[in-house]
Amino acid sequence: MEGFINNNHVTLDGRLKTDFIYDSDDMYGRKIYKADLEIPRYSYYPDIVTVLASDQLVDVKSTFAGSKIRIAGMLQSDAREDKRGFVFSVYACDFALADKTEERVNIVSLEAYVCRKPFARLTSHQKAVTTILVAVMQENGKEMYIPCTIGSKYALHAVAMEVGTQLEITGSIRSRRYVIKDGSDTSVTYTHMVRVKEYRVIESDAEILSNRTRI
Image (cartoon, rainbow, N blue to C red; front, side, top):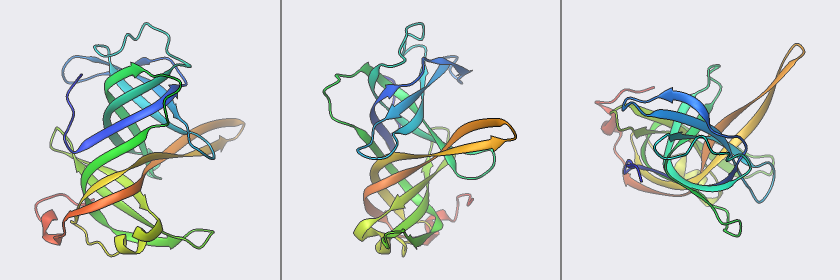
């Protein structure tokens, strides 16, 4: 198993929609490959996320499309090119074919801090949902930004959190599918967020960001 970052853990069960294709070389000289993972939901569309794996972890010459797998790894987040939302990928630290009888698994655990003032809204069913943007420190010392939604009884508490509040978050990856039409061409793209199931405030101190870069 390759190394984890202590503040960033993801475990997923899903079915690979594609085989692994070359993506890039990393700073350690490993070749990184990517594939699309379909994570089942109990309702609506499945969630789709890109899995990244090194050639040291996965036999990229094998055919995996259609296989059910379990991966453990780290969440990565990038802003979309059009700046409308964020796109997630999961860097796999452990990879295995999964038993088809296993239960659905979609777990994200993060240690992060609030880096933008939360805001709340009402859904069409008149339920409160609070959106927060958190930052997670990466191995290279840079910060990665992850949008999160908090619903149910925690939404109104979460909207009062100050920028700089440190949190432990447990939740799941959620994707939203968009169809983009450009003349006769049609393409599909996704945005992602973490749906928070539980969170715990580690420290509430707005001055914690004094030496960090705000977005």
